[in-house]
Image (tube, rainbow, N blue to C red):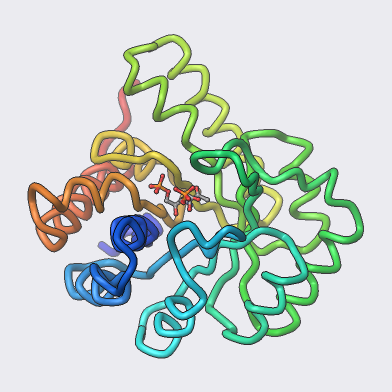
Length: 258
Ligand SMILES: CC(=O)[C@@H](O)[C@H](O)COP(=O)(O)O
Ligand SMILES: NCC(=O)COP(=O)(O)O
């Protein structure tokens, strides 16, 4: 019997290989080498976020990733004219539009799709017309998700950061409430015809849980994988993550409790 469970992809985010490189300047460790190793170990795609302040990924990294990778490249970018021009130059497989604040330590909250108005809609259309699959990085907010579908995004990536923080802090009630919001958002987005991705702050345990959410088709994971690879190596870490995701996905095919 063939399985009807849709597969789930793993996108490996190599930003924080560049963070370590940039701590000393120079060229090592090379995020492109990490991307190639990640692919050899089972990543389905690579994600890189070219921040406006270039704190980790550099313009030359984007160019080299685009030239040297054979798997899909997911270019995370702020919704600015500068980043749209760079995306149009490199034509990655996907562009994920994310909110960006210079003073933040990492991406806080989702993109304000409603507040982005017609300007954001035009940017989405421009990228899509160039053959780039457009994803919007959003919070679990029904109005923002509805607007993402209205302006022609193909994908939403749900921000799992708050949920992961509650899980890590042992705040079980808050974690359960946030997970319920993520599940609702995944269901809503899928019903609107959007492909659903999820990411931010995921580790083995939280990725396993997300992999068991049927509409979720891709997880993008970086900080945990790069950190863990110090202890277990990048290849071993990615294989371990794939096993955790497969275990979560397999639950969809298991008999459900009455
Ligand atoms: C959009 C997102 O959740 C991640 O790609 C994140 O931006 C990783 O990079 P930072 O750690 O710089 O936020
Ligand atoms: N879009 C999320 C991503 O690419 C990775 O986020 P993180 O695992 O580095 O927090």
